[in-house]
Image (tube, rainbow, N blue to C red; front, side, top):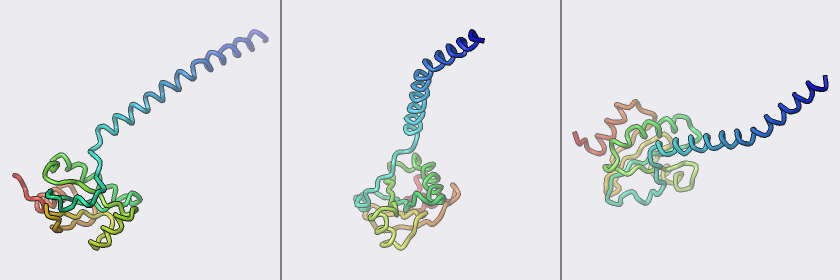
Length: 148
């Protein structure tokens, strides 16, 4: 009976000594996965709303991180970003910030809205709510002018 206790005790010690190594391996894997996920995400949206009217067309996503439809709209826009990058600057007005609240109030919109501006800062159009990709692409083409 004592021999069994010693074996069990030895097995517990060997498992305990490899646990820190496994913890480090798991931590490195998780950090690597997070870095990889960040690298494949579209570029972030600038919250610098003073860029509206700076000579480049702009689309402002009026966004609330607490609303699922707002997050869905951001993901839908992200799917089109590569196609329209260089033709428009992508900005965000986060309604949980003072500048975002002010932008939404000044333009009479709420979260889950896209506001399109020409290069001089004139409002071209607005699109409210989550849209299917074809309708969203059409809204971008109409507001920004299709290149096709």
